[in-house]
Image (cartoon, rainbow, N blue to C red; front, side):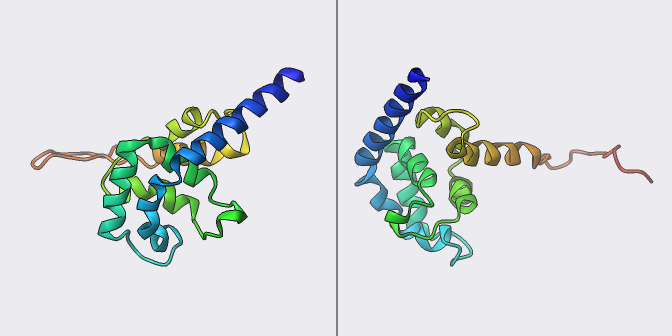
Length: 143
């Protein structure tokens, strides 16, 4: 029991440290708020530019923003599904399931579940991409 309390304290300290380090970097994502808030159909170009800059400096910062999407002190309206999909929407594929490890979250915890569920959804929605001229037969459909 004591070990769990110590680990939780270390994890909380790590997350607070990550938040402090990311505060200035997340300013670049301010233009994404209309999209991740569900008010815009697509992220603006400057949002995607800001996202690329944030990701080049620290993937942890995007993870922190998504993890804290419901934090009342932020006073932001963030749809976690849109935020998790932002890298793909900006054509900057990123493995957001890495956030669990980057933020030192306990796998299966409520905070980790947001990332884990999104990763599972991505795997279950795979698409087959064909090159021009390729023939594809779907044998799973009955005639």
